[in-house]
Image 1 (cartoon, rainbow, N blue to C red):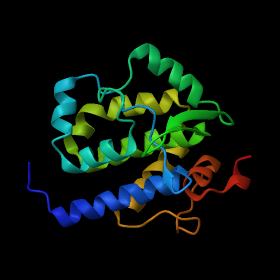
Image 2 (spheres, rainbow, N blue to C red; image 1 turned 180 degrees about the vertical axis):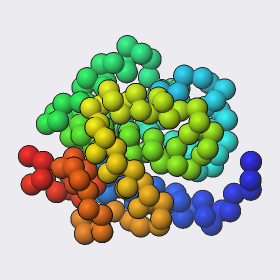
Image 3 (cartoon, rainbow, N blue to C red; image 1 turned 135 degrees about the horizontal axis):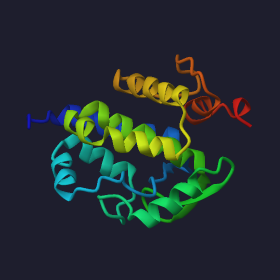
Image 4 (tube, one colour; image 1 turned 90 degrees about the horizontal axis):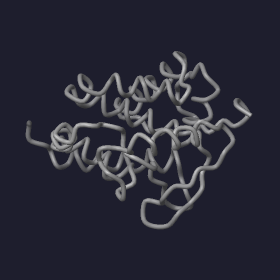
Amino acid sequence: METVNEVKLTKFEMIVRETCKWLYPYESHFVELPFYLPVLDSSKIKKYLENAYIKKIYTICFNKRNSELGPEVQYLRSKIEEIKKVQTLCRVSGYYSGEYTIPCYKIRGGLIFWALVLVAIDEEFYKNEVNMIADLAYMLDFNEDMMADWIQAVKYLLDGNMFNENMNIDFKTAEAKLFFKHERKSFF
């Protein structure tokens, strides 16, 4: 594993935090995604977390009270059914403390977004987990155009840009416009 430049890692941490605040804000902070990605091999997850950038995403974005291996199958099934509902509110934890409810589409979009970021920044993660991510996207009713929009957003972020309502991306889907640009009129 290559040596990590502390300045770059700190910049990356700031970008991840600001992105979370934009994608799923709650008051002056943001909420955590309710579970880690379902990586079922504990030796793989330990290896992935040796990558300082993956560790930052896991530490900042996901609920730390759950297993790093992701949810058990029964819990995953019920959680996916819950977050698939477009206009439903989901109960999540805040980054600092407390329980909150936010629209489920934010959880759905966040899980796929951060999964794609992980795939983009780590070749091992890509080789081992891209099929799991494709399955998760399918279970969350992502279609080809939505995946293209989410990939475009990942590229935008990793090129050093920050999300805002005026970002220069022409998304195809109403779901992406809602999730990334907060354009409610395009979806409801």
